[in-house]
Length: 278
Ligand SMILES: Nc1ncnc2c1ncn2[C@@H]1O[C@H](COP(=O)(O)OP(=O)(O)O)[C@@H](O)[C@H]1O
Ligand SMILES: [Mg+2]
Image 1 (spheres, rainbow, N blue to C red):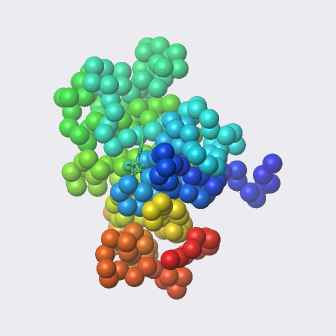
Image 2 (cartoon, helix red, strand yellow):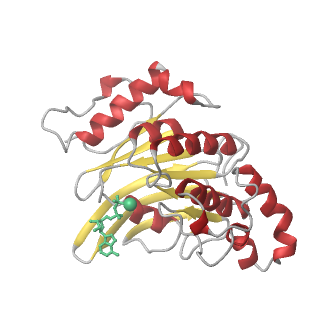
Image 3 (cartoon, protein in one colour):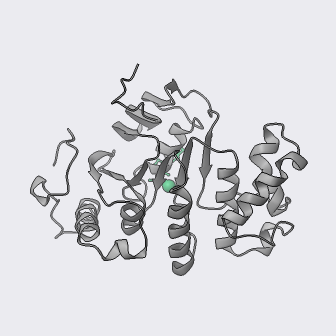
C-alpha cells in the first residue's frame, strides 16, 4: 500500500513493449501518471504513440510488460477511462446531445436522466445551442469540443488524448488548448496527451515523455515545472523556451544533420532516466 507521502499513480506503464509480427515498435517503456497530472508524449511519426495509448486503454495487448490503471492490470478497456481521437469519432447519425450522452447511455443511464449532465458539459465546452445539430453541421473545432464533452461526461479518472487538435486550424487549436487547460484545472483525473506539436506538449504537460529511435524507447522524461494555471502568457516565459528547445532537439536530432542531442547540462532534466544516450 502507498504511504501517506506516496501517491498511488493513476496510470503505471511498466517495461512495455510492442511488436507487430517481427517488427518491434517500442520497448522498455516505463512511466507513471499521477492523479491530476498531464503527461505529454512526443516522438516522431510512426514511433508508436498511438499504439502505446491503445495499450494503455486496453484496446490492444502489449507484447511485453504491463499497464496498471488505478492499481489494476489492464486487460480490457477499464471503467473510468475515456479517449479522444484526432478524428473526432462522433456518431454521424446522432445529435450532439446524443453523442455527448453516449458514454452515459452506454452505462444504462436514460437520455432523460443524462440530460442535466449533458447540458452542463455542452455549456462547458461552449456548444450551447447546438444540442440538436448533427456532427456534419458543425465545424471541425466544434466537433472536437463535442468529442471532449463526450469524454468528460463519464467523469473519467483517466483521459487519454491522441493528437486531439491535429486536424484543426491554428486558431481553433490555440483556443481549444487554453479551454482544455481551463477545464482541466477543475478536475483531478490523470491525462496522457499525445501530440506531434512540441509547443503543445510543453503548454499542456506537467511532464513530457520523449520517445526516439527505431524501435523507439524513452529518451528522457522532462519535468516541465511551469506552474498552473497556465495561459497564453506561458509561451512567453524563459522556462517554456528552455523546455521547448530541449524537447525540439531531442525529437529533431534524428531528422536533421546538424541538431545535437540535448545533454544533461541543458538543465531541464529533473527526473533521471536510464535510457542510453546514443
Ligand atoms: N495494427 C497494426 N499492424 C501492423 N503495424 C501497425 C499497426 N498499427 C500500427 N502499426 C505500425 O506501428 C508503427 C507505429 O504506429 P503508431 O502507433 O500509429 O505510431 P504514431 O502514433 O507514433 O505515429 C508504425 O510503423 C505503424 O505502421
Ligand atoms: Mg498516432
